[in-house]
Length: 316
Image 1 (cartoon, helix red, strand yellow):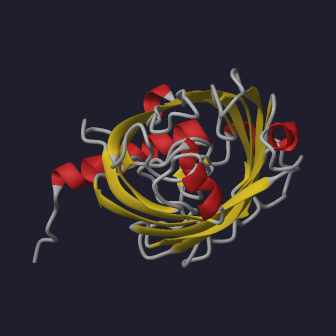
Image 2 (cartoon, rainbow, N blue to C red):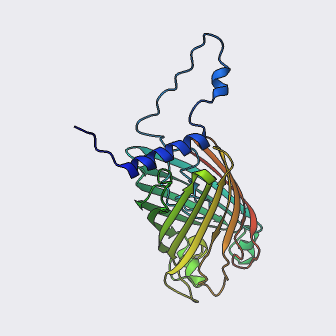
Image 3 (cartoon, one colour):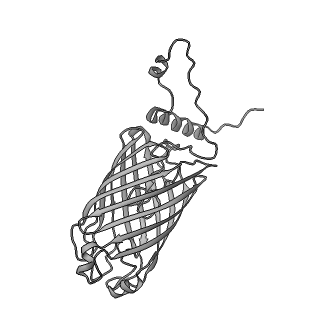
């Protein structure tokens, strides 16, 4: 009895595997084989863990400041961790952002399930430094926020479907809870909790070593939620755009840029959009380091908040 054969699916799988091998060095090179001593047997590569670690390097993204897999500022449709279908992946991360007058640290973890669902949790701590004293709050006054996220891939495969224009698409939810409710209401925010809804589309062009991502977020968060939700200028969710572009220099290095628009809800604090340019390095599938120059614009009474973003991620 003949074996059923699906030409389009087979072509997509073959194309994805061929491009992956050529771009990411999946097979031993002829030079490596020629360096063997006479009579020496080639080393046998141990098979990958069947439950974890099937994706190619840099194709799982890094940890976004609110905990989702993506770039530093915006989530991507890719599911975090290196697990493929039928596998699991997980990451833990720590991020530090130092701009002109403020400091922000974020840390958390995520779990990727069968390359379909992503669960994440993170905490952001915002240090007001000298601005806190100027506002009468005390130098080094801190605001903390917890974020709980869920992302679900709807359709598409950013790696294997190289012969289709359709991107990988995912939807996500981020539930945020701020610990300074009284202060937030005093500056005009409507609440200390909020929920962001987003949809992301990611397309990876392996033959061009290029990744493109676009995200539309429905949010009422002020400064990612650090200054609460809604305001005395505008209340309710509004649609915001987030975009990323990344170029893979090789299988371990990527450079890119991101842009994220934000709502302007508070009279006391005009809010600008945010952007960054970054370099990401992953020596292996367990470690990733991202360094960026970031511009967060105006934050409360300080303009031109620019500085350095650094993030360390470990996982599988």
